[in-house]
Amino acid sequence: MSNWRLMMPTTEAYLLDKVLYELHHKPDDLAAYNADKDAYLARFKLTPEMAAMISGNDVAGLYEAGVNPYLLRAHCIGVRIPEDVSLAALRGLMKEGDDKWLN
Figure 1 (cartoon, helix red, strand yellow):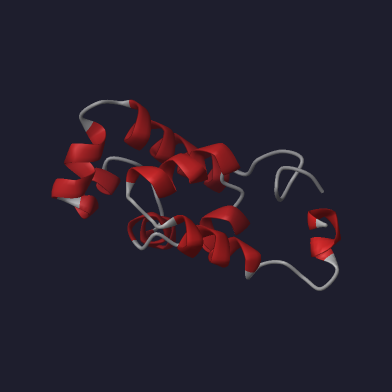
Figure 2 (tube, rainbow, N blue to C red):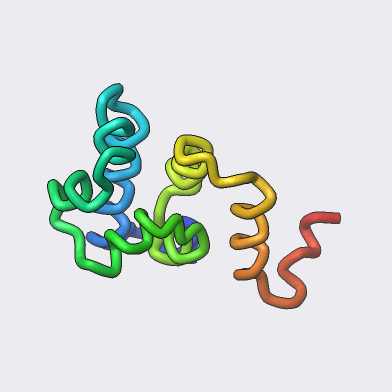
């Protein structure tokens, strides 16, 4: 395994990456998202679960879905998810022994 999850990103991961990229790299998109999340996300061909992960700021779910970690980090910053909250979500995914590289 690679990518945070898979060697080749899935269609789901690609679509999630695309939304997060556009959301945080196009000047008017973040304002449109903040004004009406559902309307903004409806522009993309997302499943209800995918849209819920983004609008619900499900950091762990997005990571598990294969979202690019840099785009996930940009999303956390862009929608002001506190760093301790985003890191706690990711640490919650770790299995025993996964933290050996942290030492």
